[in-house]
Every structure is written in C-alpha cells, then in structure tokens.
Length: 172
Image (spheres, one colour):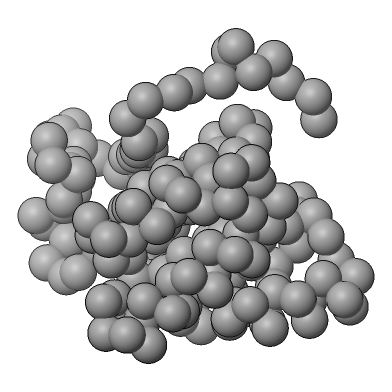
C-alpha cells in the first residue's frame, strides 16, 4: 500500500481514545482524564507500545487497541522503540519487522539484551508483520519475540493473542 510520505504524521507520539458508553444522565462513562488514565476503571490499564512505520497500519492498530481499552504509544521504527521503552517500559510490544532505521528483529534483540542486563523489566514482544513464511516466524522467535502475528490485523485474533499476555479490561 503506497502512501504519500509527506502526509504521514511526524513528531510527538500518537495516542488514540474512543468512548463507547454513556451514563443514564447522558455523560460519558469512564472518560479518561487529560493524562489518558481512566479513574473510574479502578484497575491498571495495560500499556502497549506499537512499533509500526506504515500510517494506515498505525491507524488500524491504534484503533483496535483503543477499542480493547488499553493505552497505546506509537514508535515509528526500532530506534524510537528503544527510546520509548527506556522512558516508560510497556506491558507489551507489538513490533513490525520491516522498518527504516532499525528493523524489528534488531530492536527485539536489543530490548532482550537490555532486559538480561537488568536495564528493562521483562515484557512480551509480539512480531506484527506481513511476512508469514516458516522462516519469518523462526527469525522472529530467534530474535527474542514471544509470538509472530501476521497482517492484515484481525480484531478478534489480536484480542485473543493479547489476552494471553495481558489482563485486558472487560468490554462494555
């Protein structure tokens, strides 16, 4: 899917939020505050780092994650992902494989090395890629990823896979 690179967003990380329910008086139920937290949820909202360079895939994945009730941060390549994890360790990383700057395999290797050195806590890394051959799956696992998911993204399949690793909020 070719896309005009000049139309892709740049700069600060993108965040997506969706509110699907209202209370009886018409106000939004569980509306996050400005910081993105949801005080009425009463429990930890998982943080997922999406590492993806394609704008369309970013929009779809961020929308899915928002619908699942998780916080999402965006990194556009492996270099941004390393920096984001150093700033705030996520509960899970969804990692594209083929990206400019630093690909997902190298980024996963570096994240795992930092975890072994005690610089980062342990968290699952799931490959998220269009590459579906057995050799691609093996390369992902060899680089330290916990699972290999293929694109195009399917909401139900993604939710099922994330539930293996995270306690997701109950749907409304």
